Length: 322
Image 1 (cartoon, one colour):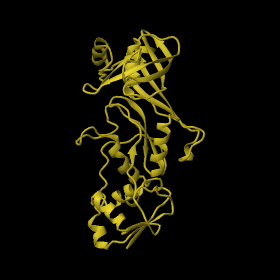
Image 2: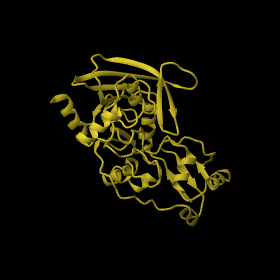
Image 3: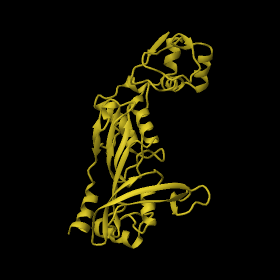
Image 4: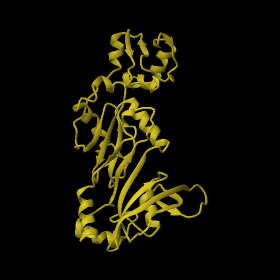
């Protein structure tokens, strides 16, 4: 018999999900069979698997040690392939400044993304142990497009994952982006519309009227600097949809500089030739946490900023400061 005690870092997850991570070579059907036969109990009682675990809960595995080891594969911590620019770290959360040209999460098996770098980084810093990884799967909580830079949130404990997911879902995090657009904007404005996505092309279109299943979108922006036919904008998403900033501003006549999907082809060609720019100048530069939070309370009321990448700084200086 083996007993597992749930710690504060592990609480909040379902029993069945935790067991599938712990017995990572066992089929789901085996886990549920053991629960039905009372070979696995929660706090000495029969459990169904859907129970939410709390700190102090005890899970008893009435299985031979040979059986337990048969269904457990030793966790292998991969080598970190991309250095992480970490703005903030604690036992629950990493706040990362994502560079240009890197995926937030894998699209294909062979891809390399920020998500795979979280575990080796956290282990190397002593924020996670192999034992921790038996209970939780650290992950990126928000996404940025490959060529969008800036703030990514990663949960490295159940508390971190749960709290970040809750804040993002309830839109309690204030996130501000900086972008460089073609055209001069003099006044701040809140714009709205309806967005429809073409899944095959991975591209969206913005309309002013709703016809069928278009999603309502709302975007707020204010000019920080406008000169020489360009504007540096501070943008806040009131709703969060695919390519919202890029498509919404382009529909208003202010395409992002360098944007291959929604930008001006002639302008993009000029930027490639002059600066070597091959993607949109869009950066998630600021995040503000609410004053009251259910978890990760060390982040309450705090604000974090991510510095602009060098390419963004270079183009901005050339277009707006010279």
